[in-house]
Length: 217
Image (cartoon, rainbow, N blue to C red; front, side, top):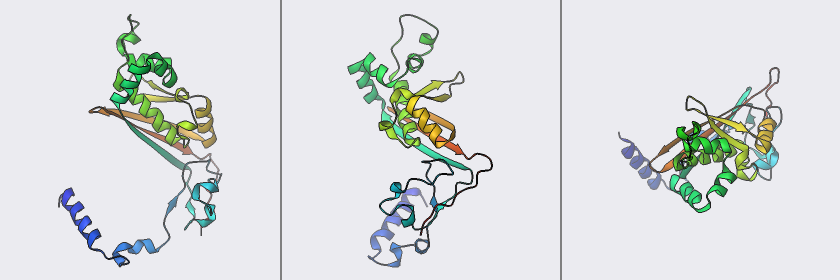
């Protein structure tokens, strides 16, 4: 059965189910759910209660699963390359200086700029957009969004292999240290006028630390 046929069958089953029937609630939904601990604090520290609503941790339908020494947070972002190109066309150097570091801008200009050829080529919009998306993704993985960290506090530096690497400064570095991150990786791609980036933050508990079971009902 094709994917489209599977989707059609699922839609028919949903539309034919009467309100309140057993089809509305699978058998497994009658048991306590498995709740994973979000990466918002160090392993030995319970997540802040306000994250889960007025009742806090105590109101959860089950305890949060201990992280067993490793936890991850993922951030993703996608943006139109044309949108970044328009911002650069409109604001020029001011836009570059607000969002990107000097190293990032130089790498976005390409190999000729890196070799010192003058005059400097214009930054490539797709490369700017990729780094723009990567910074958005990193801020999500850090759990702050761009209200909690500044654009230039997150730097995407391309290694000689072509792989992007992450450097954090200021509040972004402080947040990573607060979470006890042991790794932060990012991947960037662009296709048909869009740039997309995924960031993965990894938290590894220190040796000897025992996982904590955070309360629930």
